Structure formats: C-alpha cells, structure tokens
Length: 400
Image 1 (tube, rainbow, N blue to C red):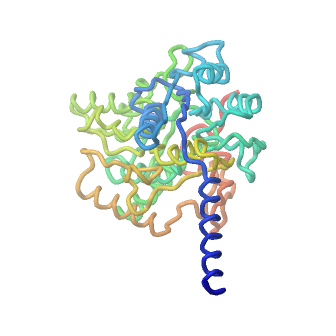
Image 2 (cartoon, rainbow, N blue to C red):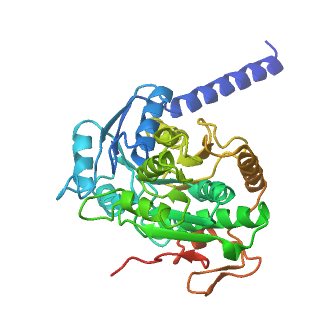
C-alpha cells in the first residue's frame, strides 16, 4: 500500500469516527409525558380548546409523547388551589414538562419553575424569560410562547369595519392588562385602516368601544355577564361585536338577534372552529395555532436540545392558515360578503408585505403622543401598551 493510499484510508476512518461521535452526541427524542394546565374547560370552543387541540397535535407529530391535563384552572372553579399545586399533581402522574396556558397563571408558573428546576415549563403568553422585558427572571427550565395575535386582531377589525352599516363596533373585553390592551388596540387600528383606506370614510365617523367583563370568561357573581354586555352593544346601535374573551357569547347573541330580524354580526376569538356556533352571522375568527411551536419546544425537551427563550411567533405569511406552520390565522366566516372578503385578502397581503399599523403618529387615549410621526413601535412599546389609543372608548386601566 502506497503512502498516499494509506493517508486517504486514515482520513476516511477519521471522518467516519467523527460522524459516529456526532451521532452519539445527538440524542434521539424519547418518550415524554407533558402536562397541560387549562384555565377554562378543555372544550370551550375558545382559548383552552386551542391549547388542548395543540396537545393532541403534538401526540400525532412526536412519537412517544403523551398529554395529561387539568382544565378549569381558575379561582372560581378551583378556589384555594393554585396552578403550581395542580402542576405538582401532573408531575406526580409522570409529567416531565408542564404547560401553564394563561397569563393569569404567570406568578404560579414562576414559583413552580423555581421550585422544580428539573421540570421543563412552557408559559403561554408570559414574559418572564424575555431578557428585554420588564419581568425578566433567569429560569433555565422555562420557555415563554405567544403568537403575534396583533395581526389576527387587525384582520378582525378590518372585517368588522368593512361590514358595519352603522360605523359602530363593540369589543367584548376580558380583564385589563398589557396583553388585552394591545390586542384590543390592534383591532381598532385594523378597523380604522380599512374604514379609511378601503371604504374612503372619515376615521372620526368610526365608533369603537370596549366593555370589559373582568376575566377571560363569565364567572357568575364576579364578572359582568358577557351575554348582557353583547346585548347592550347590539341594542344600542353597535352592529358588529368583536370578542376578546375565551368563550362564544357574542356569537350566540348575534345569532339570536339576527334570527329576530336585526342586522348584526360577531367575530369570536382564539379557536379555529368557533364560527360553528353561528355560521350565519360570523364574519370570521382570528385564532391561535399552538401546535407547531409546541411540537418544536416539547421535542427539544425530549431530545436534550432545550434552551430557555422567549417566543412571540408571527403568522406564516405564505399561508396564515397553514396549521403546520402558522402560529396565528384568520378563518373567514360565511357572513363575510364576497366584496369584504376580497378586501380582507388584500389587507392580509399588505400586512404580509410589511404594512405596520404600529407606526406613528399614534396617541394614547389621554391624548399624549406614544409614537411620533413615522416612528415604528418596538416590541416593548407594543407588548407593554399602557393605555388604549385615541379614538377608542372604554377603560384603559382596571378600577381600583
């Protein structure tokens, strides 16, 4: 054997050895049991069902994965019990990763993460591990996940403005915090843009009012009744109600009043199938699609590649309704006219092309400047919006 041939052979053996070592270092994803804490019922046709369905999606995409869950994790259904305590129960049943699915669970998720550094935690909608955020905590075992629903709400506002015959849009709001302010404001920005650009109407002629019920869904004796709030809107000239709560009362009431002869419409929230509650009056639904992010993140826990990070996931602009790729979508409803649907599609294309409605001039509700003319809002300015915007009616901060 020549020296050259021997050198080539040795080189090949070294390459094979290196590849083998790399393969050994990369751990295959093994079986994993993940727990999920759902703030509402698993089948609420809203926020909680969107998470539950995402968990089932993970089971189909990640071999050996199994979901266990506890639903109705809220002070009304489980008084005296914290999400952290319920997470302990899931761990006792075999969960090595726990999903806390509501901003309402933020403090409890942090408490649990600190107490259980060996258990991976997904916190949906929080900002604990956002290094540039206001609440940063070093938690190596936590990942925050949220979809950029601001886009979905803009599309919802657009559909509402293109449909309304009175120019009065109501927003059925949950509780008041950073998340709900920015999402409600996004709906207003989308409505104002489509009202002025596509319909050529004066922004001052558009009425946009939000009424907050006090929580993500109705708690009798604690919150305002969302059915009554929706009725109050419809009976005072607001012909489109956009919902920001986890359940579908706005759709149910619009369906009932439409059957009685009123020209009213509704836009639900959270769950891709929520228009089923009232197809004839539903203009569409902005929905979360947690599945792709959950598959990626839970896989990282299973194969050892987990790394704490904060995610604010945008729609897949190639197809916002691709359930394998897009974190946020908008499913058009049967009640959206062909002309309005065409304009909604055009608006989505504008957003995909870079249109940013969080660009100044934008004033807060009290008239103070928030974004100067031409100034683009940072992630922090959008995430931590301190008030509703000028042109919107409703409370900006909770009552003391």
